[in-house]
Length: 287
Image 1 (cartoon, rainbow, N blue to C red):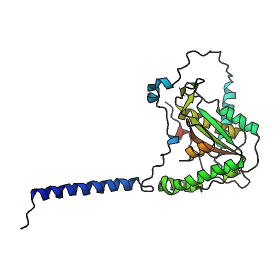
Image 2 (image 1 turned 180 degrees about the vertical axis):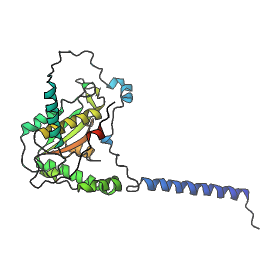
Image 3 (image 1 turned 60 degrees about the horizontal axis):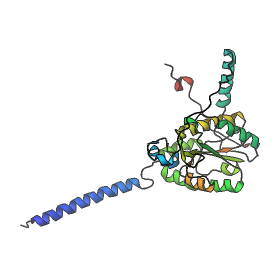
Image 4 (image 1 turned 120 degrees about the vertical axis):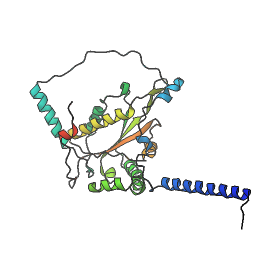
C-alpha cells in the first residue's frame, strides 16, 4: 500500500489551502465585476460630506469662525386666517401642476427670469449660513452639446451595467433611456454644484456644514420658482459625470455636481406619464 510521508501530507495540505483561498478570491472578484452586482450609489459627488472631524484636525488650514454678526429686527407679514388658507391652497395648486418634462422647446427664455429664480434659490437656509452652492447657467450651444455627449456616454454605462435591472425596470414606465435630447434643445441648462468647503479672504478653507442638505433645499426652492415663472424642467443627477463636467465648466475641486436642470418651455408635443401623487393621509402624520 502506498503510504504518505509527513512531508507529502504537509505539501498536500498547503496546496489544498491555496486552492480554496484562490477559489474564494475569484468569487469575490466576480462579484465586483461590472454588471454582476449593481451599486448605483457609487457616485462620489452625490455622497454627503458633512463630517468635519478630519477637517477640524487640520486646524492650520481652516479659517476661524466669525465671532460677531449684527442682529436686526425681524420683518414679518402676517395674514388673516382666511387669507392664509387661500394663499396656501393656491400655492399647493400651482406646485401640484409641476411635472418632470423631458420634451423642451428651443424657444429662448428671458434671462431676467433665470436670474430671479436663482436669486430665489439663494434664499435657502444653510448650515451656519455658509451658502454652499454654485449655479452654473449654460446657454452656449457647443457647451450644451459637450455636456450631452459626456452624460450620454456615462448614462449608457449606467443603464447597461451600473444601475442594475431593478432600477432600469422601474424607469421603463417613464419611457426614458440614456438619450438626452433635451440637453441640446433646452435654451438653458442649470448645473447646481455643492461646495464641500469654501475659502475665506485670506485663502484658508472654510467649513461648509451640511452642504448636501443645504443645497438640496435650495434646489427645491429653485424648482418651485421655475414652476411659478411658467417654465418646465426635469431633475437629473448625472451619475458618474460630475468630475468631467466640473473640468468642462472650469469649476474648482471643492465643488461637486449635485443636480442638472434643463430649463425652458415645454415643446408642443410634450407628453408626461399619467401619474398620481400620494394623498395627505399617506404623507402626513399628526402626533
